[in-house]
Length: 387
Image (cartoon, rainbow, N blue to C red; front, side):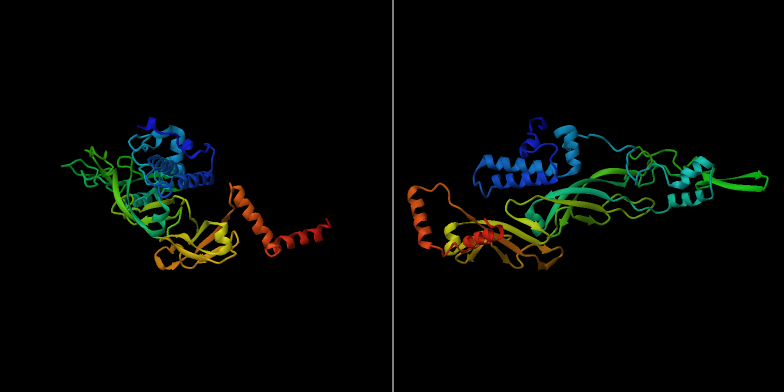
């Protein structure tokens, strides 16, 4: 039940005023902490990891975050309708007012442009695009995936086949306008007879009369339905990019083509990798001994972990580049970015006395051999400051 769910801000440890960067940073830290790979067979960590992912999915989506801030968990519960579209269909693709010609006709008694307005109203019209947002994992974005999404779209009413008339009945030609959708009037003026046109009030410019409207669509010929669609997300897609599925949006009117389904893709941050374009960056901790003596260390890649040799005397923050091991370019598997591995030398802590003495002896045995950078630094400091 929604009332038993933990607060998403509490889960991520952030305030309601946290920005997008704060949400992503909190998610990244907690996902790394509770990741199953780092907590094998730990049920508590697995539960926390799922909660963190759920919280990020909501708070990283501006629309869902807004509903959650206003209504809590009920605001993002798909089983609870927090408000329906006014008039059945909202937005520019609804069934509201027409264009500027209709407005002018209303205020000034009609212009010749009413005829063209009526023609446009009865001409084929492309359906509106529908928009949907999904959250996918870092790996799904890198390698591509198929996702089944649920969304709503305007479709032709099946009960009346889009005519708007109840079964067994037909639409009729409007008598006052003769099916043109406009009325012509004449009046005498000091400069002669003037003719004007206005939208027919009987059929509202459609040229048709529906005496028995379809009860399913209320005479509109269109209904909003929920549907499912499997969508292919291309490999290499990045956070915030869009995928368009042709002709899967709202159906067109008067035989017009359907709009498109526009999907905005959100990508969860990875606990280890950071992405910049098609390049991947990763910090790898190594021990002091590995850095000093050189070693074959284990490094993560997009295809899994593998061995990599580092030379003796490797300094902290040294970056090693694995060419063409980054993310492939969208729709072109032959082009890939690079993988940059930055090693971070871990300074040992919690040493016992024996270990400390060993390090002191090692330091004394080195003499000035390994202190050249330190000596050079202070010489430069004294020379420039006179201290």
